[in-house]
Image 1: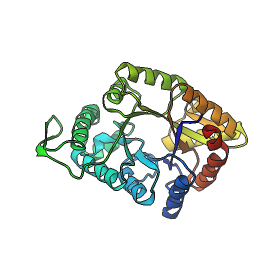
Image 2: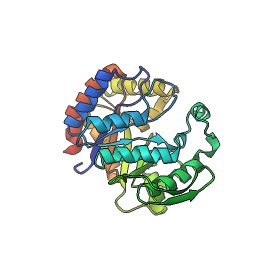
Image 3: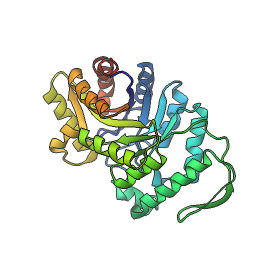
Length: 304
């Protein structure tokens, strides 16, 4: 599976967030272990404690030197687009172009939209306008824009980022159209092999850019027993998302010995996946143990 990029995320946890010391040690180990990318998810208010994504991304900028860092995915409608363009552009500038803006409409938790004063039913329209605004401000001077949700005249944001790829996440036709129109990459979350294939075909049908990065976001638990790891992955997903995943864990997660996991990842690569984001499906106190298991038992097989 040579050629596939592999990334990690700290992840959201039913058991809470890691301690600051543990968090930064985890980030350091990911970069030292040779992973290609490091990602942060996003919620303002969630079923479990979670850190604010842009603050974490800024910490990644200051803490790392080589690795690509990004959001997977940022709930774009919850942020004012000019301010968001300035924040992401600044981080891309300070990291010498290592930032990826992974963006989506969100929507699982209506309460966070209400708390932020954002109409939940308009989140798609808000994101479409925001994508136009941000991508222009990152590249152009004297931008004028008048839309339903944002309006301004003759605005320039400097310094411009050296590069700032946009990756789109989502499972709807609207998300696929956005990925084809704006995306340098597509992030498939809660994705079986069938969904990944269908999403990729749909985005290509809408006119995807040549050379897009096709990303599979994979929940993963490594262990000697497939049955034990399946139970751990299921417990993580049930408690993190406050719902019963049942047999869907088979479609949305990989678990068991390294060779079993690598075979599932190989299937996604055969479908066109070029990038893997791993979310260790375990509580915070087991994150470092799972990271080392992934480094020793999974990464060599994927890279092999």
